[in-house]
Image (cartoon, rainbow, N blue to C red; front, top):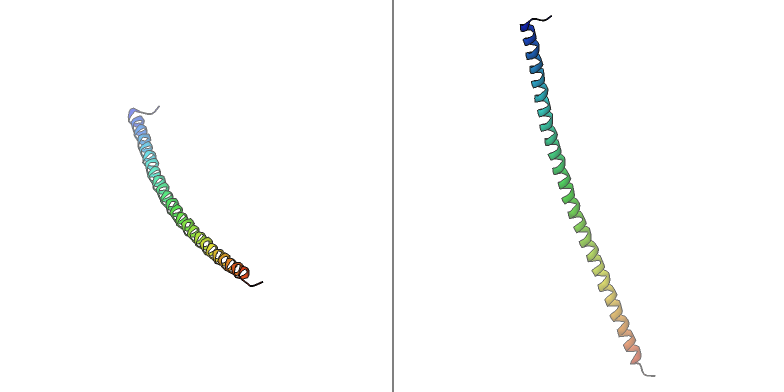
Amino acid sequence: MPSGSQAQAEVQRLKDQMAKMQANIVEQIVQLKAEAASREREAQRKYEELQLQLKAEAIAREAEASRKYDELQLQLQNMVKMFQQSQNLPS
């Protein structure tokens, strides 16, 4: 049977071991929180980058649609002029 001092030493050793384990767990939690925050910042950065890209693409599509619309308007005006001129020809 262990003596009282041996039992106390064993209890102290186990307490020390538990304290080290708890410190390691706290350290891991801090590290995981830091990694999660870093991932969240990166995800937010990528989200904002994609938002800007989508806006730029939308502006480009709108500009192209406007250009095509203007081109079609011009063609229509030319066709109307040609039609009016053909109506004014002597028969």
